[in-house]
Image (cartoon, helix red, strand yellow):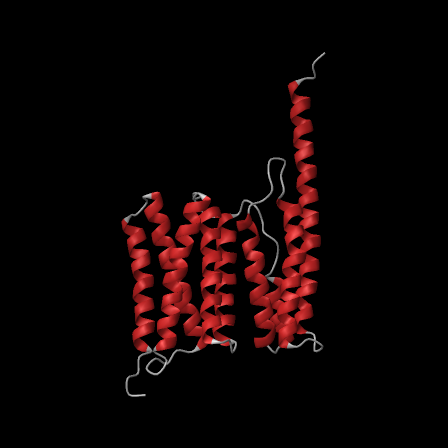
Length: 258
């Protein structure tokens, strides 16, 4: 004898609700553990080199936690889901060296959490904030110029690839990889130009990071709208406005008589 349809629906709903509760509890537990590890960056026992080693440890701990949260019955999560973890670890490690006040660092650390499925606007906002923080860390810390450019290319490529694969209509992995390389090259070229013209440009670290972020946002958006064939008048005005601000920041920093 078959069960009534209503009983089946209720059973499915109950199972779904239970799974949702388990996911939420696991996410909270994983977030608390990751924040606790991130707070270890501010320990006086750690030197600058050890901070980056702990950042790698944060990624190693966060990856299986994210895997357990995102894994479904069909397949394992793709690599793009782990990119915010790598960018976030880089940002927190660098900020632990740049932000001396503990309470400010606590606020920044509280913003670092595991990925929340289904919230595209929230995912996009977190990606932009983490990328901006990563840019600020890279241009502020005393890296070798070549290493700095490599860092900028790497984090730009990772952020672009995740955006092409997750946010909006998903682009195929190979095409997303090629498009991310293109965006990374453009942003890295801008960083190289600013560095090469340092005798004539007066650009502080914050402005430098904002310029790189605008360059990433513009080029990533142009690629996505080209692929989706979704250019409209509002889209052109939006990216045109960001381009004008980027050009203004570049030109206003030029001081030939310095």
